[in-house]
Length: 96
Image 1 (spheres, helix red, strand yellow):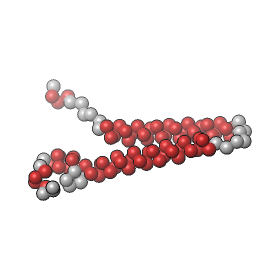
Image 2 (cartoon, helix red, strand yellow; image 1 turned 60 degrees about the vertical axis):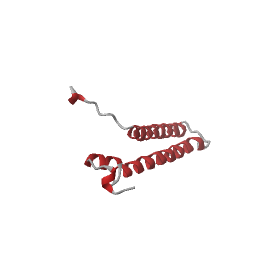
Image 3 (tube, helix red, strand yellow; image 1 turned 180 degrees about the vertical axis):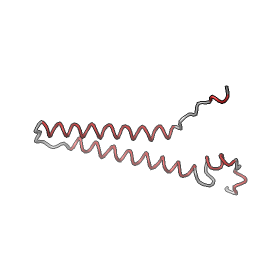
Image 4 (cartoon, one colour; image 1 turned 180 degrees about the horizontal axis):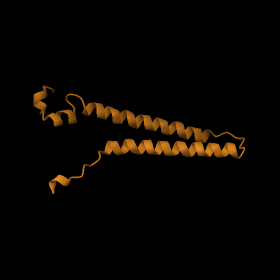
């Protein structure tokens, strides 16, 4: 039964995928509302909708920068995953 282990998805992966899904859903919703406004001959401005897209894009950039920074730190010499995969202890690397 030990061969039936379920591999847990890291939380950072869930956060990255989650922010991408929220960003995509909100962007498509805003574009649909803008299309509806055009279709209904709305003559006003839609700054609150276009601002929402920009704000979510900025949030996505911050989250993904952190995610890829973590990934870079893990997959380099002295990183968490790299040394664990090779079975190298901290004393063997010579890092302080």
